Structures are given as structure tokens and as C-alpha cells.
Length: 215
Image (cartoon, rainbow, N blue to C red; front, side):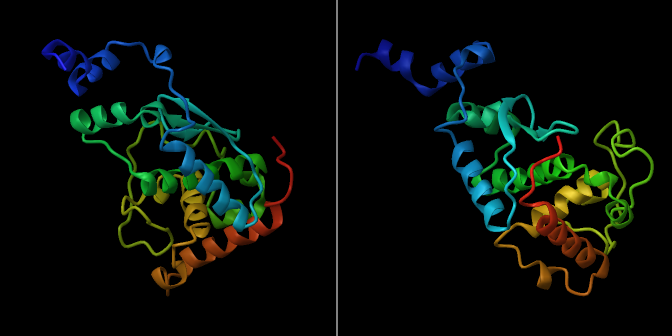
């Protein structure tokens, strides 16, 4: 191969070309990316736990579940191997399949909550200490205070994210409850607040898991 061809087709040239191309012209797709097997596995896990909800997944500039819907946004960068590498090199951000799967379980938790308007259920509001409007009380930024010694919240990632808001408390608890590899009975043994929430979430799944969404 000539030197010119090596320069034209090497990884640095490809990365530069990607960085200069509008996202809409990159031809990104969920299929055949790392996202596809993660979604398939998440759906398989949900089905095994009795959750038949089918969220709509699409590429976006962030990860998250659209408020009040079952639409789940996925970071576009994880739909391309080279973009994932660029992000790791420049931002030190990288998620493997396990990381993405845990994130999907969390977002499906939000979708499950919204699909059946669980935030309006009296016992849900009591268990997750919902006060006022469920959505309008959400923090306007990512800053939140947490109590590292609390025994009332799951903490699978070590970031105390469940303490941010009842919405995330439910989503994090849901993610733990439907993780087939999570031995939550042992991990949270003696933490009555956590165990009550997990058992309540599993009861919600038995009640709503096979129903059609309200939204």
C-alpha cells in the first residue's frame, strides 16, 4: 500500500473525517452497534421478570427517558465504534456492554413508572416519599445532596443517584430488582428501607408488568 493510501485510510484520518461530519450525515444506526445486543438483553431480562413493556429506543445527544413517555434516548456516540474510541481518548468516557445494560435497566424503570402513571399511586408516593408535583420538583441541574450512611436507598453504582429525586429512586430500585445477577437480599440485608422498596417494586411488576401502558 502506498504512503498516500496509508494516510488516507488510517485511524487518525478516519477520526478527523468523522469529527468534521454533521451527525445527521454519519449514517448511525442502533442495529449492528454495541447498543443492539444490550437492548436485546435488557428486553430478555424484562420478559423474564414479567415486564412486557416495549419502550421505543432512538439515538439522541444524551441518554434518558423522555418525561411522561416510554421513549428512551440513547447516546449516538455508542452507535459507532470509532466515535466511542474518540470519546474515550478525548473525554475519558467509555461504557462497555455491562455499563450500558445497567443504564438501560434504569431508563426502562423510568418508562415503566411513566407508562402506568405510578407516581399518582398513593402507596408509591408514600414509599418513595413523593411530595408535590412529581416532575416539577425534579432538580434543575445534576447537583444533589446525599447521605452516604442512609439505609433507605439502593446504590448500585456508588454515586448515591437514587437520592437525587423519587423518580430516580424508583428507577434505580427497579434496575436492581430486575438485575438477574444482583443478589440484593444479601447486599442490602438489614436495610429495611431498601428492602421495602425493592419488594414494593417487584409487587408493582407483578401487578402492572403484563398490562398495556396508559400512555
